[in-house]
Image (tube, rainbow, N blue to C red; front, side):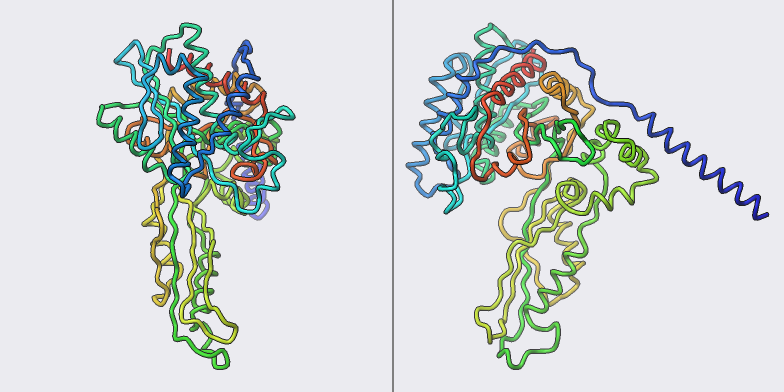
Amino acid sequence: MIKRAMVFLLLLVAALALAVVGNTFRQGSRQLDVPPLARLAVDADAVAASMAEAVRARTVSGLIDPAGTAAAFDALHAHLAQRYPRVHAALEREVIGAHSLLFTWRGSDVSARPIALLAHQDVVPIAPGTQALWKRPPFDGVVADGHVWGRGTLDNKSNLVTQLEAVEMLLASGFQPRRTVYLFYGHDEEVGGRDGAVAAVALLQQRGVRLDFVLDEGLAVTEGVLPGVASPLALIALAEKGSVTLELTATAAPGHSSMPPAAGSSAIGMLSAALVRLDQNPMPGGIQGAAAEMFQAVAPEMPFGQRLALSNLWLTRPLVERMLGRGGATNAMLRTTTAMTIVNAGNKENVLPGRAEAVVNFRILPGDTPASVQAHVERVIADPRITVEPMGVAFEPSKLSSAQAEPFKRIERVAREVFPDAIVAPGLMLAASDARHFDPIAEHSYRFMPIRFRSEDLARVHGTDERISVEQLADMVRFYHRLLTQTAS
């Protein structure tokens, strides 16, 4: 009897192993096999000069000086008009809000659903005390060492400049889009987009515009993002996370430190216990949505062990999710994240404070909401002495666009053509962009920057020594030029 059971068990294990290995090898590469694309001739030096001039316009979000801000945007707009005369002659140009720009390139087929390319003009300020750390002044627009240096080169004036370069080239060649193309360049993306993108969408809604797809800034072509993936990884985001910030407050009777209250009943003690519970009980998550789409596309390109694990999630899901959930970018793709950013209590070493406060920021996964996050926090803390209140501006995650839709396939194909060494896959954008505001009028919204990011470049975004290589700018022009010929014709 025991012998028969052992034989049965061995056969079961063998069958399971055979199924796992067989399923692994059945998961063939999902990468498009595209023929080599003739390299478009681009005047890289001229593009770099235009980029440098755009950097010199100090279009910083949230400046206290309205006149200075207006002058900076006016300077940028004047440069664009001078550098791209065909764009300004052939396309309709509107100013939205204070300084946002909306260009309309009318298509020949009014029945064809239009598309939109997005970028933003505004940049974040230089962190106080860090300007001296820059190798090149952040607003001088220096071209040196094969790069354009300065704030906005990566986030996000490079998208703006290279899109206009591509359109200018297409106009010079006599290209006429079949469907209408919108170019929208917001002036307040870094502070929420209320007066720019939100206003532009309201205007387009009034006109009855329904977009086939929107392409905005987002993920890029990166290396070393996923362990085991040797090739560059070009991730096209299908969605972006939302955000909500909650303030936790504990109150207690103040007093002298020589006579502390019972354990766990001081304001700091109550708040500390609540934060520990919150830290140890993150929002539930898992491989779903954009993360599932990404791993399905990437798994066949990974070494056998990782390929086996990701190709057989019906068996390996708990282990894989536990490993991915250890922190960092992979964890952020799986769930709504919890980040404790501010704690404030007490002002003297011998006084028990009567109030302790903590600020916790959550980046919300599609499927969750600000309300569901607050409900989770209150349930985990389970302490009526702690109040939980939203603070600041909360926003929902964007809708999840399809990786099987025709617009995604077109973007995917162009990415493979321009970056032939890269693995192209869907992804999830962890930060926010103007694209989310277009959800009400866009069938699909995607987020991708046609630029190669190395690990050291990631810290330059919103950081010190922001720069972009001249050759990268040329590749961005090639990408947008090809994309427009493939999607608008």
